[in-house]
Amino acid sequence: MATLKQPKQSKNNMEEVTKAIEAAEEDNIRALEDEFEIGEDGCVHDVPMLAGYVDDNGVLHSTFTYREMTGKDEEAINRGDVKANGAKVVNIIVERCVTQIGTLTKKECGAKWGQIVRSLLGGDLDYMAFKIRELSKGKEIEFSHKCTECGTKLKTIVSTDEFGIKPFMGQSVIDFNLLHSGYIDGKGQSHKEGQLRLPNGFDREIVVPQFKKNPSTATSLLLSRLVSFNDGALVTQKGITEMSLRDRKVLEDILKDNTFGLDTNIEIYCDTCGANLSGEVGQSNFF
Image 1 (spheres, helix red, strand yellow):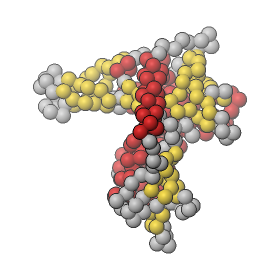
Image 2 (image 1 turned 90 degrees about the vertical axis):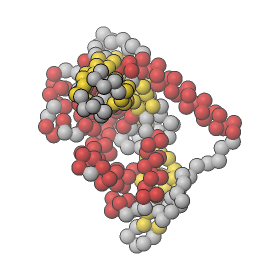
Image 3 (image 1 turned 45 degrees about the vertical axis):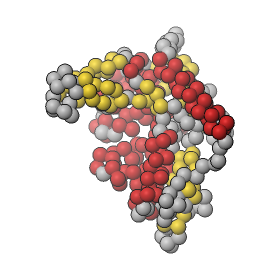
Image 4 (image 1 turned 135 degrees about the vertical axis):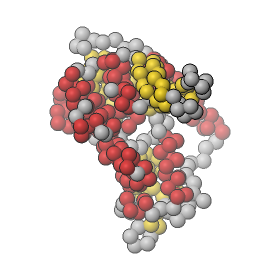
């Protein structure tokens, strides 16, 4: 049996954690619904991030400033090599249109700016790109889909106000303990205790194209980038692939439980057959 490694918590501590999560959810909902004013420089200033960026000195930068997209930005994300990779689209939009993160400015950071953007957690990147899109193209999004009951092709117009935000749980690195066979290295040694970090822009840009080919292979590649063991064992994609499904599920569940950011799932009604469906607005509909 595989379990997560978690500290024991008293009832009072659990209540405090629950209250903190609820408060974060309320703050995130307010952040999504707030109307931000455009400054004289054409930018929206000091918008709260969901998790934030910690720099090399350990300083947390928790706000961002952004501008509206231009034709040049649209051309940049519609290049063939970019458009085929949704994570790359998001990274480029944020890199080009976000002008400041905390006290760090794009101008002062220069060539390092792209690295800073790609080191942001995925939930923050999606949220930032969403706010840029909302400023640039408005709140209405039209997307096409098919009714799973009757096969009718549908077009739905939704408002971005209908989207929610999954809160950041406060940890970008999570401890785990594999109690089944664990991760077996090239010498046959088992490794079970370690940490898993949440994916950033670099990870997603590399892994997203693989999901279109083989989701299981993509998951192995992603986990090989995110997992580390306390004893310093070398982690390879081959080793992750050969782990038991039970141990892999522990790691996959950590990712699922700690995923945060924009929730684009909406309820859809089919006028033809009357079915109530759930759908997700795809990235292609955003940009």
